[in-house]
Image (cartoon, rainbow, N blue to C red; front, side, top):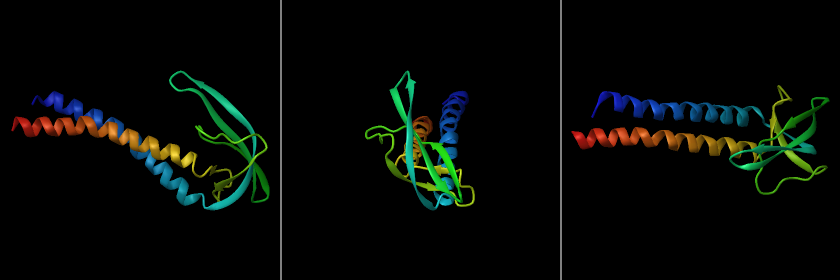
Length: 136
């Protein structure tokens, strides 16, 4: 197998594993640091138009923590989108209450992206290994 092809395939795989690793670290950090529960009120739903997946709905929620009100925007929700005024449960960082996420939604997005990037990155590396074994 040509060295350039092997380096290209492995480089392509690593190029996808880097964001997978970063997303995995962010997810782990978020779930370890955001340990406090709070009720949040959905203030509005931000709608973003994505060319590849159409409309995306991001709930903007407000919650009370450490003596202050905070507002945050959740990740893209598919399926059941909460209604404005609805109360939802969130997790926040007791040391930095501005950091929060919606369990089951925001962390799910990170998990899915980590898996997708990891699998896409594995394909060219496995092809490279398969070609190397076949050639030998």
